[in-house]
Length: 565
Image 1 (spheres, rainbow, N blue to C red):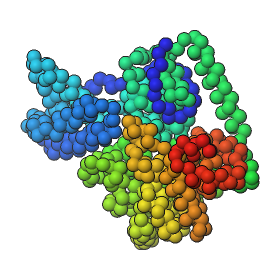
Image 2 (image 1 turned 60 degrees about the vertical axis):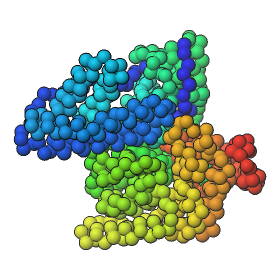
Image 3 (image 1 turned 90 degrees about the horizontal axis):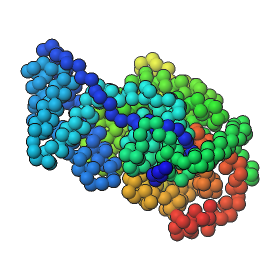
């Protein structure tokens, strides 16, 4: 038996057999092209190289474990940026009429053959670099990454280096027991999706891949953050008992589906759900959520080669809105960094994407794309239950620009004779210090505020939430964060506006009483956590907590606040 420490994405226990997900052999078809296809092949080459370079840049930014690994990824970028590489591939296509896949395969095979014949150990090591770059580029071009779940069954626990948000959804559809990744952060989008789906997951389990093989029994202990490989009979029995107990707890929580979330002192709390993908609407309806407080629409945009059309977005928004009736659907416009969309938008690489073109900024710098989304939302609102929310608002000026764009979109739809409904509430996300400080002014310009605690913590404390090496600095109960929430609530309430919390703090049982004591009106949580949070609301006495509010707000440390709550 061996134990490897990791970071738990969600509490709970999962037991299953190891299935290692790794790269597989690519099958390159030896195909020649016609002279008329040369230009399109070279264009495809440049587009895919740009995509992979940006993908590597993001990995380098996120890879915090060692300088050595960052250096390796930097060297991979240099291979793709080498003028000799670009020139030779272009010639293999334009002069020899090779298909793009065949040209890339030939180039890298020739390079690897040259390095293989060298006695210099450093140059011999370059073989691995060239093999990795070739695989990354070709697998992206051939879209081979889709098929690796074919032989995975529901008794599996997947072990892999890292995982993308879109791949988490594919894993969930397989109904597997859980997954572990060697890299990653519990605050990444991939982790948020896994948590929302109640999918047991560990991240940052360094060394795990070197200690398991397919078929091994492994336990994911999400309570302690442990991966237990080949457990002893007694350990397996212990965890089977824990799993059975957790199953019974979940069974009892199902009894709360039709119970109103009312505190012990009689205050009804609006409890809604966050969703990442349209498929999650099933869980929202199953658990009788009071609507959707946050639909993260960026997952319609990333991990694809082109932008979603207005009609495509309209169909998705309309379908979810209709299923939510009579409850509301709050659609957040695209909230993603430029690094995620650089392959489909003309965005240059940023040294610091977290402080760059993201959130409402990317929308205001890409007006045609933004207008497509706004029009799709306006059209979908014919049933009248959609609200729209804008991310990373930092000033009133941004809201003024947004309102003008909505008006322009309305006029364009009128001129086109297309049905729509512009009568909808507008909300602003409070996620950065400037928005907290001016939340009184921002509240006057919209109908509601929603606090995104994930980014509020990140920007208030200057802590990259995906940077595992400084995760100890990411403290939801840091006094500055708690006071920021209180300032926002007070400013909104002064003019009769409601405040929701849709960040991960709302989905954590231990923070529910704190948020309600601070005056938060609504909570929007991961669908899989809704009943657990409802149970906490039912056991909460807000007035008792409010009696401790002055003491809480005068706390000097996160530890003091945690002790008090």
